[in-house]
Image (cartoon, rainbow, N blue to C red; front, side, top):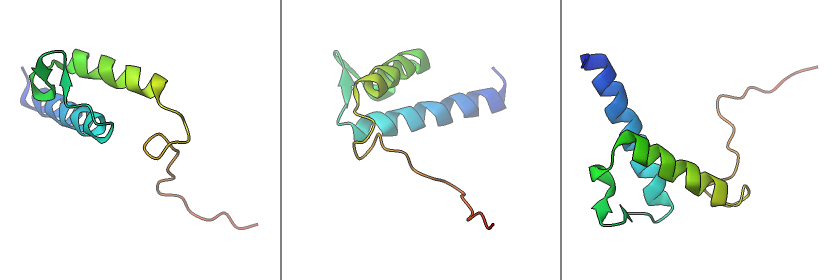
Length: 71
């Protein structure tokens, strides 16, 4: 596998693991998060996003790189 692709996959896996940990999810079934495939992590994250209230602390909208518009 291309080195850049592997690096991107590992980065995405780590992002998803960190997001799931924020939701107090440390295992799926009898597997630790780091043992799951990228697809399994994506599915678990998608499920949590659907179940999470949109205005909760971790599910709320956060503005990034916003500049004030002047009229």
